[in-house]
Image (cartoon, rainbow, N blue to C red; front, side):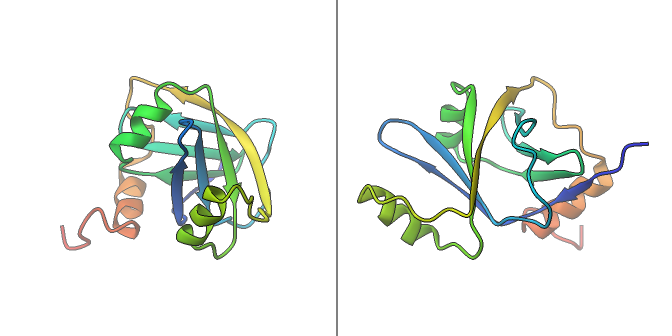
Length: 136
């Protein structure tokens, strides 16, 4: 039986003027499997299959991110502990690359079906992200 963790981590997207897309995540414990990492997108939400034991749920993407992802074959994923998005964005605008601790490219897989996340786990993750009210 396969076992894996469904995780919620702090994350942000940066789209530059050339329409390049970068996903920044707060890195969870364990290493990413750079050869098999996948970014699964269902038209609204996404998940990053980071390695065989970890899936990161990435809900409610912004319309600009959705538009950009829809035309991509891959996405740059940067793992950065304790990042400040404004600082990272300002550095990139100045053409200064921050010292990323880990980065890799994830293949983008677009599916017409909703993400396959068990309903009880999906509700828990959405509460963590503040999307659902825990009293509902």
